[in-house]
Length: 422
Image (cartoon, rainbow, N blue to C red; front, side):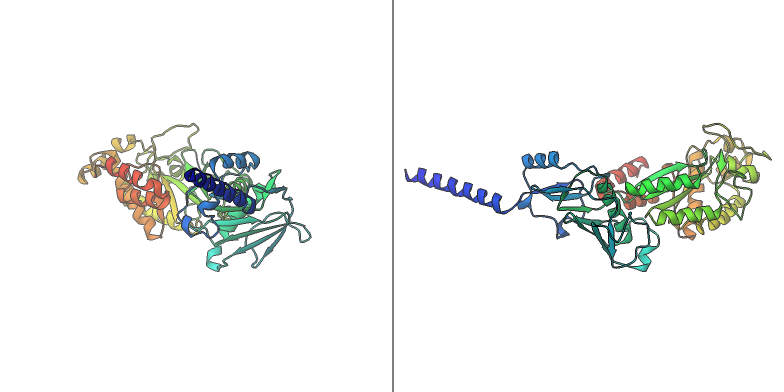
C-alpha cells in the first residue's frame, strides 16, 4: 500500500513539474541544418534542455516555413511566435560606413536593421579563400533587427539572408539565425571563351550569386574557339571583336569584390589552345604556320610545344601580366583533354620524351604542369586544373585539405594515395 502511494506521489510530482515548466518556460524550435566546428563556443546556442522533442519539432516545421537558400547552419525561434512581414525598404544603422552595396533603405523607414562588424581596413579589400563568412542575424521585434559579423564578408552573407527573408510572407519573431558556410569554395563557372557574354550580363549573374551566397566566379577565358581577355604584352592573343579590355575586367573584379565574390581566371593549357596559335603559331607542337579559330565543339588536336624553353618564357611574361589584373591567389590552367596526336607526330618532342625517360604522354603533361606550378609560385599564385593525373600528388593533397570540409578530407586523401599507388 505504501509503495503504491509513493509511486502515485512521484508520478504526480513529475507531472506537476513538467506542467509548471511548460507554463513558465517557452518551447524553443532549434533547427540545426549543418555542423560547425565551433558548436561549443557560441553563447547563443541553447542548452539541450531547451531543445524540443521530435513531435514538437514537426509542429514547428509545419507552422513556420522559411524558404532560404542555402539553409543557414542554425535557426532558433520560440514555438509561440508572432509573425511579421519585413518591409522592402528599411532603415540601416551602422558604426562604420559600409564599403559595399546594401539593401534598399530610407532614414524614415519604420523597420531598423543595426549592423556591426569588426572594422579592419585590411579586411575590406579582397575576400581571400577561407575568410570568416559567419554572421549572426537576430530579428527581435516587428521593427528591429541586428546583424553582426567579424568581417565585411560575413555582413554581406547576412544581408543576403535578410533579403531572402524580405521575400517571405510570414517571418516568426523573435528569430535568431547563425550561419557559417559548410564549404569555403562555392563556385560558378562561366565559359565565355566558346560563347561570349557581355560584362553587363556577368554583373547580373554576380548579383544573384551574392543572393544565394556563392563566392567564386570561375571565368573560362580561353579555348579553341576564342581568347576573350586583352593582353597588352601579346596583343595578337585576344579576339579582335568580342573580348574584355583590361579596364573591363578590373571593373568586374571590383564589382565582384563588393559582393564578396572572388574571380578566378582560367586560361586553358597545354591543350584547347587553338586561339593562342592564331596570333602566335610558334607556340604549337605542329609545323603549321597559321591557325584559325575552331567553329565547332569537341576535343581538338592543337597542343602547345611543352619541350621548348621559348614556350615557358612566353607563358612567364603572360602570367606576370595577368596577375596584375587578378588579385586572387588561384590561377586555373585547364589541363583537360590533352590529345597527344601532335606530340606523337613531332620528332623533336619524341626525342625529348626519350631523353627524359618519360613513358607516357601523361608524363609529359605532368612535366609541363610542374614547370607551370613553379612559374606561378614565383608570383605567389597557386594553380588549379581539371585533370588529376597530370599534377603533383603533394599539390592534390594540399588542395583537398584546404578547400574541402573536414568530414571529406580523409576519404579524399586515401583515394588520391591509392590512385597513385602510394
